Image (cartoon, rainbow, N blue to C red):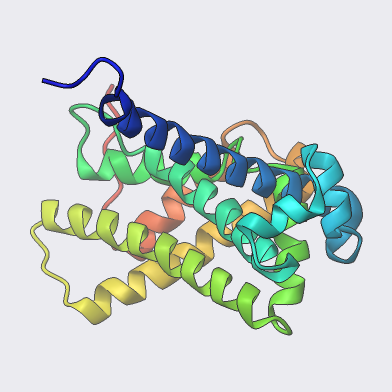
Length: 223
């Protein structure tokens, strides 16, 4: 039985948990402040001082979480790409849906808000424009691209399995690369000139094109 004057063993775990949660939240706040600063000032203008002011902290505190600006930019870009992938993956959680319906929902999610968004596009082009000359951003882009492509490949595998087709790894890779390109192209169009398209038009084109890439027969419409 613990002595009443020594409660530390009981309280220490909760204090440690609170600290971890607090530090992770502060880290995320700094990443959000970085994205806001890049959107407003560009990569050069998003200095540690600017980011610190945006986050309401000191530049010294930023260095407690990130070695420097380059590492912070890398984390911010990775967060941006990861968020887009997670938003698209959320559309897959449809109860009693067929693999083909899940694929359509995935494509639709990628070609609608909040993934189609002028600010997101502006941030993406800002980072991607620097990736060729910045190894850390190039690495973040590669990881984000491969992460999304892996999700596409998994969905495609389910669809083809339901069609009783057994593609090998190279065929799945081919389909995933092509579908990623289809989605990317339509996403860019939607972000740049969304007002030129009717509601749902880009998604409908995307689904039709992706299904053609996979060789799926058109589904019959109910009378």
